[in-house]
Length: 417
Image: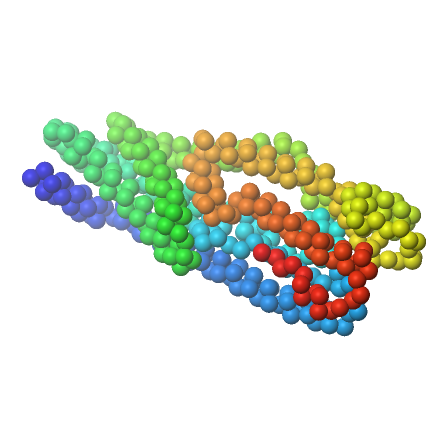
């Protein structure tokens, strides 16, 4: 009897919801936006995957063309580009994050690396602040508003219809009336974002663990805003007052807090800019042309004793050239480390703000799962530095040991992974 009564109650609430045109439209809009966001995410990440695949093939073909007429390992090291890339994770479609503004493809040479990393176009700051229309944006900003629309006038509507006194006179009115209504509407809102997400995750073969953790994030943000809207809805206030209060809370924690962090707190974290690093590295490289070769080779030999040069050099020598390229990176290394440290500090400020901003919390959660956050971007840069060191370990012994040129050996150059 209890199960049958419960089922009847749920069916009654479903029929009541279907007669509520505002609720139906709100859920339809949420579902449509989630489908659009999923489609945009899938299209964006698929295009990035295609870009990476094309660049890998084009990079190989270009290098073969460039290296074919060469007759010196120094020329090969100078003219050969090598592609590096940040392959998207299976959940990147749901939280595009840094991939929307930061480069996910870089072609590098054996020259000084810092300039190659930080030279390039700056992202549009307005677009960077708005972010991509992905599921993390929907979950952070749109889903809470839909839940407010669905729940803010639960009690006020019954009061306006003159049914409130009768309904609250029922035994266990809150459990039998309000709770099913709240749970049903929140569940449908959760389903509107969860189902398109699952479809997108299956397209990219995401693991069950990844899907589960992301769904847990969606469930948590849904539960938070459903609980908040419901608590406000059960107050003896007019519907307009409740709605305005709920939207005010949304503005405070989802807009004011992130904007304050972005515009007031994060700028107080001092740190150099990428352009400063590239400039220092470039000046160090340019100055080396006018200095005695010993000014480059002596400190270089302290870093790499195995590459000490005893004999006198010609006016130009590839060993000296790549030595001062490396010393240009050394000159910019402290500035580069400070830059990365300032990025981490800013990210830590945003992480602390996420404790009071559900929007920041869900976006950071999804971006971490999708590996599209600041940490992932720094990890990619670290992998580029590691690969540059692999290229050095391949070319420098050939140059400093004066290995006779054999073009076939270039096929043994390390491949970025």
